[in-house]
Length: 151
Image (cartoon, rainbow, N blue to C red):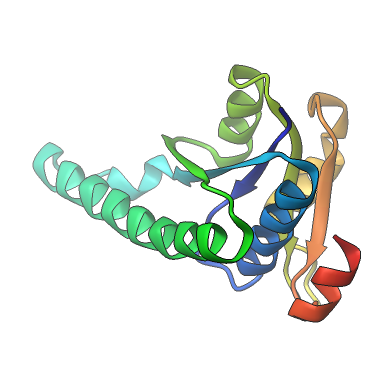
């Protein structure tokens, strides 16, 4: 079964990537895996403080995931899974793809700012020879109706 991998972060465009992945999975009989990566530089404090910050980051990620998962279950009939990793975002995305052979498509949301689509998409494009699966870039400014028409 094909799994759509979506990166969960605090960006606005993440919402469209989630919607797109859920809609495609529902229409193709696939699954959705949501990946969130905690950057290591967030925990360069004393050990105890770093542990507390790490736990708070995991709680925040889980709360965001719960909102997306409820929408996917209620609207699309999809029950996504959550993976939380720590490290460099690009490297962790590649590692997750390598570890889960069911992942067939990486879905990323593009920023709407004039500065570009976002650092992860830019890195994916520059390093596309290292990415073993296709990736879909979903514009962050698409409406729900536009997403429905292209999925």
